[in-house]
Length: 83
Image (cartoon, rainbow, N blue to C red; front, side):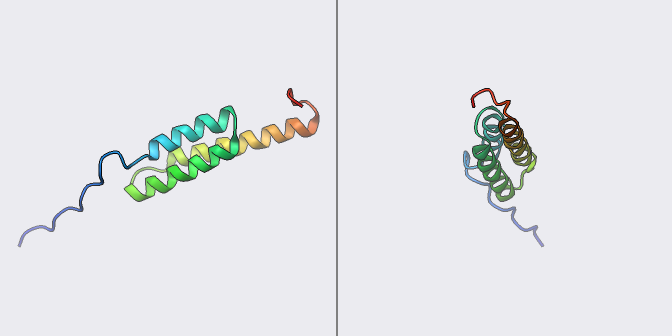
C-alpha cells in the first residue's frame, strides 16, 4: 500500500504573516496603535491559515495596546507633548 500524497503546497507569495506581524509591530509602536492591532490580527489569520507561528501577530497586538494605554495615560495626565 502506498503512502497518501502530501497536501499541495501553498502558492508562493501568498503567506504574508511575517510581513503583517513586522508591520504591526513597527506601526503599533511608532504611530498608530489601532493599525498595529489590525496588522497583528491579519498576521495571526495568515499564520493560522498556513500553519505557521502566531507569535509576531500577538507581539504586534500587545505592543500596540501598550502604546495606546501609554498614550492615553500621558494625555489624561496632561503630560502629552502634542496636546
